[in-house]
Structure formats: structure tokens, C-alpha cells
Image (cartoon, rainbow, N blue to C red; front, top):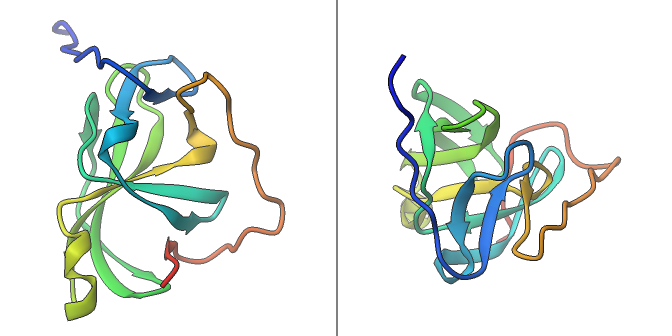
Length: 128
């Protein structure tokens, strides 16, 4: 197996909660008003040090989207997903953007985020 290529980010960094690999910087947050099965999720313009899974259609609170799950390049943990395309015109702004689930990452201060016990079990999406 080859060497893993990783980017070290500068500033306030979100990282994988399992291995602390840098994933994104605060300056790239578009919205903090998204939700997922485990609670809060943040929409980012870009993330680093991830690999992508297979494309799939997923029904979310704001309609059908084509997404790929994203995984930490170091430990392989799923950390969120990337929007590949949206069917609804009002949701097109999400295309090419990334969701990091707060439960699966550490914040810039190194803190985790607890699971919300009453979080929804279905698809995830932003508050409108």
C-alpha cells in the first residue's frame, strides 16, 4: 500500500474525532444550520483529507439529492457527505459542497459534540 497524502491545515480546524486528521477550516463554513441523524451538521465550501464513496440518490428533508459519503483518508471513518447534485432548483447551491457531521468531528478547540438522543432517523438536510 502507498503512502497517504495529507494536507495540514492552518487556523481553526475541524478534525476527525478518531485520528485527529485535519478536515476543514472555520473560514470555509457556509452554514451551521444543518441537521443529520446524530444532531448538528455544518455545510462547508471545501474539505481536505477525505475520500468519497459511491454516488447514490438520497431523500432528505429538502428533497431528493445525489450524494457521496466522505471518509477520513487516514482512518476510514465516515465524517459526512458531499452533494453531487440536487433536483430542486432552490437546492442547487449545495452542489459540490460538503457536510461534516458534528458528532463525527472535533471542533477547533478540540471538543467533541454529543449525540442528540431524539435526533431524526431519516434523511438529513439544512433548516430552511
